[in-house]
Image 1 (cartoon, rainbow, N blue to C red):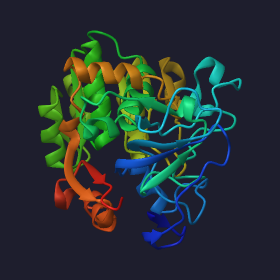
Image 2 (tube, one colour):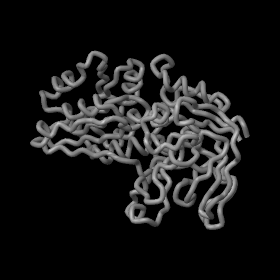
Image 3 (cartoon, one colour):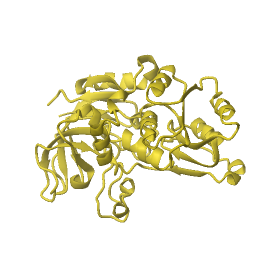
Image 4 (spheres, one colour):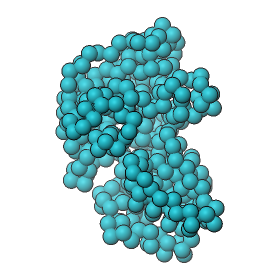
Length: 348
């Protein structure tokens, strides 16, 4: 089969690999229909993810058809259409028992990181019963593939952990796909103000279309002061940091109001400083961590009800045979006005 593989140094390319087989009886092999590229994949290519195993097939997001199941799999059968969660969970360990699947003691973020991922014709999913989600045929697979990661991440790590409440103010730092997913799902709670911050004019336009009340260009480094001016120097109730660089964290500390929350969903590959000498007296709360993807069933319902439209984030379509071009388009987002790119399996 074809698979997009990174050698851990400088080369990522489409190569020929053996089709995966059942290894443990809880495994499911899925024929991928659609996959996509995540900002985390770019962090891997920049060697900013220490857990990545060189030579691993990239990608942790996908929708496909069950090809085969181990004997212990009870919830799925060949022919079922499924969402592949970006998180693998055993369902029985201490962490899974309290629905913290992202911290599963025998799982977590495995696909496209520690084991072969979804940017291929086929993928082997460990613990299939608890790592896949059955989906109806009447929902577009382009929408469903965005439920593997960015919408659960934006909602769980950004909105829920950030404790967005009706009438509160929210700042989203970074209007890439996951930041925009957080913006879109924050609207479930009817915040009074949503400040979208980015350096990219196109992404700010999209943020406004998706419901931001203020779109603030930070290309000259003035976003913090602009928001403080608009809030009478108080700041905002919830800051969602979605870029994963120290500058984003620094902005978060300056923007959060006393008693407010900072939710970090950006993937940080470098140290960032917590300025406790300034922050200790402000009663702020900061959260960060892996998504658990337990909200995927709810998000499917929101799509069916018309309250959530993931397709609004899809900018480009590619075939698996065009994976390298897809990565180039996603990497150079400003040049191509790219958001989420969909990759369809044209090889099997």
